[in-house]
Length: 317
Ligand code: FO1
Ligand code: CA
Ligand code: CA
Image (cartoon, rainbow, N blue to C red):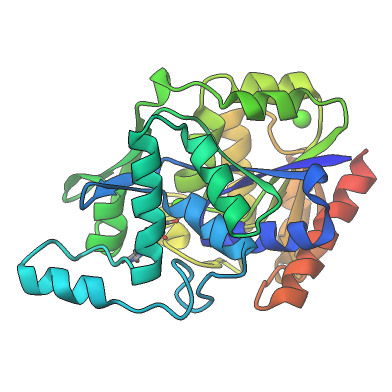
């Protein structure tokens, strides 16, 4: 059957890339978080859409995690020389993406259309769908005041302590109709929550008006992959954020959080083999557990984790 994957940035893109190697385009579509999106130099930047697009196009920089490989930074250097704002780094190739997107949006195209067009030109066959068309912006309430997400993440390097998050504009947003259609497809087998940050990447998607209803109407199982292994976030500020939000940084706490905030959301969980000790706790929450090596350090590992996810889906359906 078909799979709908929910993906944020780097961690999500890795699993998505693995799934894309295992499934043909008609069997895999991804919903991508757009609450990290913002404007810089008058350009529309969609970091998570780009991370997923570059990963599927095999153009992503593996070490940095964001942007394109073999990048040059001459525009940034020139902008610095002019005294312009340079805390957000855009490579010379990456800039073309932001320029192209901004032009097309200004000309009246939808983000879904522009994304599809860029994907087509980059040879990405699997569909990447922004969660909604309306602008939604994560605001981070911290001990140093409220800031926009990229200010918190990039400019302040996640140093401020997080107190809460708000997705500005989410109430006025509506679910991308292409996602609603895919969720209503009788061949849909499961929804997969990629190992992205639950607070920053997955919550915005789940909070788009209409998403939860369309998901429960679909009746398909939801499988999540642990974004925390042995008490550490695989990437990014998740571990630090959980501590600041008074939660233990553990793979089981992520399940508890999803169940508390979003109701009986998760049906099955792919837990890292290093966290075997947490399996019992998660099963107690009414969630099926499978253990695997979830580290995605190379393409073979991404395919291995994707296969484990698909086997789990198989068991549930
Ligand atoms: N992350 C950084 O830590 N520093 C940057 O300068 C930076 C630039 C950047 C440019 C384009 C892009 O698509 C992503 C970029 N990111 C950068 C990553 C991005 O802002 C975050 O990783 C995500 O929003 C969090 O998932
Ligand atoms: Ca993100
Ligand atoms: Ca369920």
